[in-house]
Amino acid sequence: MSDFDFSENEVQRYARHIVLKDVGGTGQMKLKRGRVLIVGAGGLGSPLAMYLSAAGVGSIGIVDADTVELSNLQRQIVHGMKDLGSPKVESAKSTMLDMNPEITVRTHDVRLDASNVMDLIADYDVIADGSDNFETRFLLNDACYFAGKTLVSGAALRFDGQVSTFKAHLGDPHPCYRCIYHSPPPEDAIPSCAQGGVLGPVVGMIGGIQATEILKELMGIGDGLSGRLVIVDALGASFRKIKVPRDPGCTLCSENASIKDLSIHEH
Image (cartoon, rainbow, N blue to C red; front, side, top):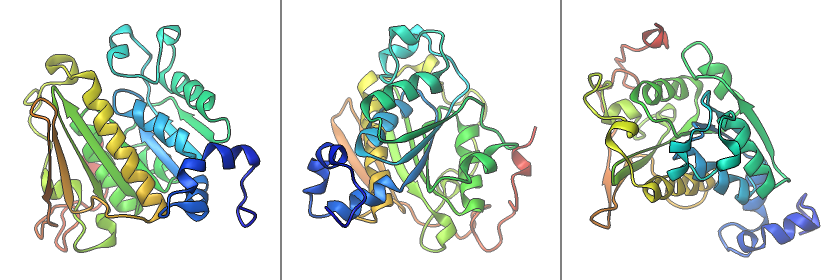
């Protein structure tokens, strides 16, 4: 390991990674140098934060403006009883550094919107969407496209979830989120987590898949999920992976796109 900048503690900590043929010291160093922004420190953000920290991603940012509530603890495992009333980003940071003090965690205790999104994502390589609303998902998709950032998106409701990776900025054949969902659904058309509910482990499954895809993207290994959508049906114990083509008429990433900036997100 002399060719890599690892301490003895890091060599021991990441030993089960380093022994993997597709990871090794080179892959682990890419993780150490990696920078990931997690949007949302809730159900999806919790497993993302914990697995990315444990894996040794060197710099992790977290965006969330909420505080920890008792109803969160059924699924948001990065928080505990002692954190009730605390900012979620600070609670998550404490857990992450307790798991791995070798990493750096940056907290952004703000609500992500069109006025700050470009600044927030600027310093990171990969953006993890752990948000719980369509407004944020579409905003992140558009911002990442304009900023040339890879976006790993997840969603979960009731017993179902889905994950995909978007890097339409690289051109054809990579689609963006709008290639699948052209525009946000009408307000109240789809229930929120609070209204529809979600089985706790389902967000763990989806967040875990997101974390895996992020590590693969940082290391440049395996087959990614750009152009593919993984759909999880926990009640039926099934996983499906479907192809998602780039939409030649997409309002964001096609040649004749009508969306040229983030002004459509300004209120």
